[in-house]
Length: 65
Image 1: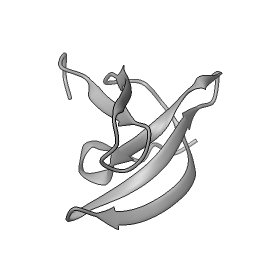
Image 2: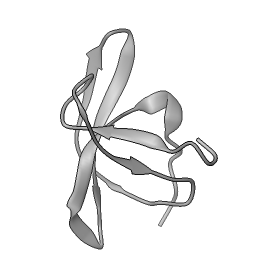
Image 3: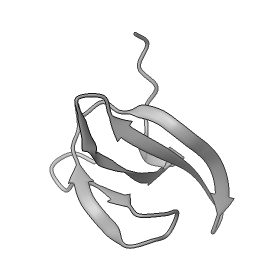
C-alpha cells in the first residue's frame, strides 16, 4: 500500500474505520469471507484493540512469528 495506506473496514466492503500502513502488523481474528470477488479477513492490532477491521487478502502479507 506504500504511502496511500490500506482501508481497514467495519465489515467486508463496509465503511472505512482507519488506514493501516506498510509495516503495521495485525492478528487474524475472523475470516475468510468471500465477498465481491475478494477474500476478506478480520484483523486486530495486537497492541491496540481499538485498531481492528476487515481487509482484502490481496493487500496482506503473512509474517511468521
